[in-house]
Image 1 (cartoon, helix red, strand yellow):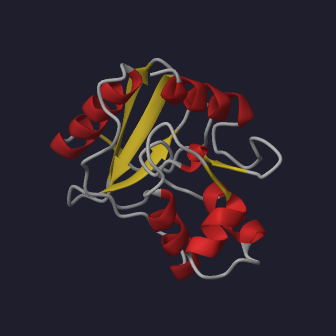
Image 2 (image 1 turned 45 degrees about the horizontal axis):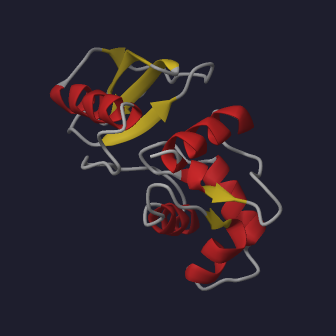
Amino acid sequence: MVDGLIHTYMTVLGQISISEDGEGNIVGLYLPNCNLPVMEDRASDALDEAAAQIAEYFSRRRRSFNLPILPRGTEFQMEVWDAVSKVEYGSTATYSELAEKIGNKNAYRAVGNACGSNPIPIIIPCHRVISSSGIGLGYAGGSILKKRLLNMESNE
């Protein structure tokens, strides 16, 4: 069993599970049909707050999240996720643009892989990162969910 807590909430997408490290930092968000880590299943103030902010996001009353997050990844992944977090609601960036922003313009494939490994989708909005030729692959919830989130954000 992994240290921390996990709890499942109902959303417009279906059931999502959110995990925290036991100190109130959000470390994972699991979209429907994703494999869940084995953790103690119990709600907490941090998980309830994250679920409330996600519900506000889906009801279009929230454009960004104000949550303590602690994604686990390599130094490169963390750099990519930080850059992704700066892509504003209703906007998109390409994998190439993000690669340039982190100072490695040829790393667009690695940026795509980092987005595909994002442990906290929606909160770290990798759905806003697309290929230069279209939506792109590798989103944890699949390309249909990615399009749905982008459409929701663009129809404000």
